[in-house]
Image 1 (cartoon, helix red, strand yellow):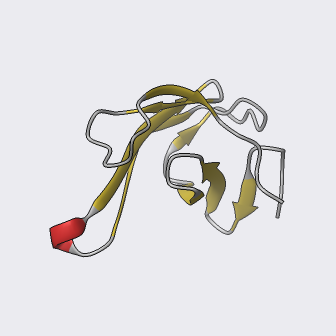
Image 2 (cartoon, rainbow, N blue to C red):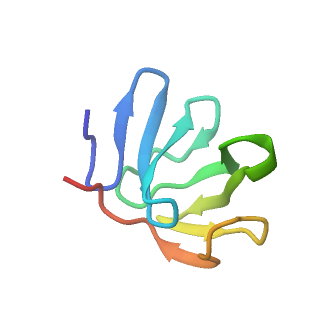
Amino acid sequence: MKVSAKLRRAEGMYIHWCPACEEMHVLPDSWKFDGNLDVPTFSPSFKHTSGPKDARAVCHYTLMGGVLNFCGDCTHSMRGPVPLPDLPD
């Protein structure tokens, strides 16, 4: 269920669009959330991995004040701060 332009809600999680991976990422309820649906802050950082061990893709970031801050260990090309985009249609 869409709860804002930036976030969806499912049982036990929030979901957002990642512009680096071009896919949705899950933020579990076990992470700290400030409750702001428009410019959210979640902590700690998130490290999403996918693919086989020998070709693992990594997306590691913090989400603070509605800004994704991509870490240096990401395997995609985005680095640094990127505004959290609206959800795709």
